[in-house]
Image: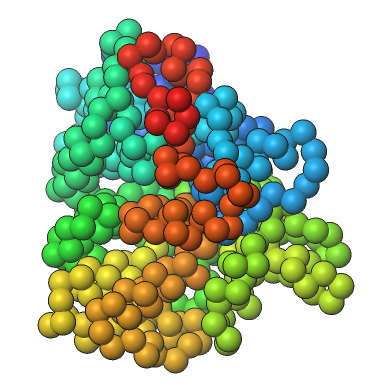
Amino acid sequence: MVMTLLLSSCEKFVAVEDPPHQLTKDKVFTSDKSATSAMLSIYIDIMNDQYGNAGSFVCFSMSSLAGMSANEMIWTQSNTTAPIFQEYNDHDLTPENIYVHTIWKDGYRYIYRANEILSGLATATNMTEGVKKQLEGEARFMRAFCYFYFVNLFGDVPLILGTDYKENMLIPRTPAAKVWEQIITDLKDAKALLKEDYPTAERLRPNLHTAGALLARTYLYLGKWEEAEKEADAIIQSGKYGTGLPALNTVFKKSSPEAIWQLQPVRSNFNTAEGSQFNAASGSRPNYELTQQMVSAFETGDGRKQEWVGFSDPVNNPTWAYPSKYKAGNGPLTEYYVMFRMAEQYLIRSEARIRQGAAKLLTAKQDLDIVRTRAGLLPATATDEASMLLAIEQERRVEFFAEFGHRWFDLKRTNKAEAELKPVSPPGTWKAGDVWYPIPGLEMRANPALEQNEAYK
C-alpha cells in the first residue's frame, strides 16, 4: 500500500510517500523520498499525538503538566480528570498517572523511530549523500531532543540506541550523566551533518542552529558556561534570525521571525492545542488558570503580560487569568508551535557570561536588556553577579511561562525547586524526590530491570 503524507498545508512542506510503519526497512531506504517520509512522520505524529485524551510527549502536555508542577498554572474544572491533574499541582504524582505514562510511551516511540532511521541510513545505497546527511542529522537531533526531556523529567532513564525490541524491553535505567553525554554527542553530530539553510521554505525541519540551540541549553543545564556561551553566540552572530528581537505579537505566529525551529499543525482547520485549551471564552473561567504568583511576577508595564496573558472576566473575576501566547484554536492556520526561539539564546548567553565572572557582566547585561527592551521595560538595575543571576531568573520566568516546561526545569537545575514550591504546595505533600516524575507503573511491570524513583517507592 502506498499513501502520501502531507501536512495540512501541503505546499509548505514536501509531499512524501510510504510512512515507515507500513514498509519494510529495505523499501524505506531505497529512495530519498521514502526515507524522508520516515523522518517527517515523526514530526507529524508529534503533532497528531497532542490531540490524544491522555496528552502527548511534548507541545501541549509539556506546557500544561510541567507548568502545573512549577506552580505556573492550576486546573480549575471539577470533573473526572481533575484528580489526575491535581497531582501535578500538589506534587503528589503516582506511577499510575496516565499523562506520565503517555509522556514516557510517546517519547520512547519517537526514539525508536529515530534509531530505525539511523540504522536504515547506515546501509542505504540508493540515496543521495546530501539527503542522507540531512536525515541522519535530523534523526540524531530528535533522539537528543527526546532524551533531553526524559533526563529532566525522570532523571536516570534507559538509554536505548538500537532497534532490537526484545533487548530494549529489558534495559535498566542508565545514569543521567551517561544520558547527558549521549545528548551532547548526538547534537554535535547533528550540527556537523545539518546545513544552515532549512530543507523547506519555512523553519519546519531542524537546521544546524536548531541542534546548536538545544546544545546551548544542554551546556547551560550542565554548568558548562563557556560552551553554552559559544553555542548561543554562534546562533546570534549568524545573522540568520536578524538582529535583536521582533515584536511580541509576532513571536508565536507561523511566520515568526524569532523561531529557530517550528512544528506545523497537521489537522485541518485547527491550530495548536494551547490555542484551543488555554484560551477561555469571555466570562468563563479558564480550564488552565495562571496562579496569582505567576501573574504577580510581571513588572508594571511588562508588555508580555498584556500580550501573552488573557483575562476572561477582568471586572467580576480579575484572577481568571490564562496563558495566551497561542491565540488560535479552530480556524485558518495562523500559528505554528515555536519549539526553539531567539530570546532563549540571548538569555543563555547572558547567564553563561554572568557565571564566568565580573569580566563579562557588561556584555551579559546587554543581552538581558535586549529581552527586557522588547518587553517594553527599562534596562535591568542589577550590577553584580548575584543580582544579575536573580534578574536572569526573573526574566526567564516571565519570558517562558507556560512554554514547554522551562520554569520547572529551571527550578530544578538551580536547586530552587523545594524553596519555591514547598510553601505553595498543600501541607505535607512536598517531598524532596518530587523534583522527578515517577517511572510509569505499566513500564515497571513490563520491565523488571527498572527501579522506581525514591519518592514513589
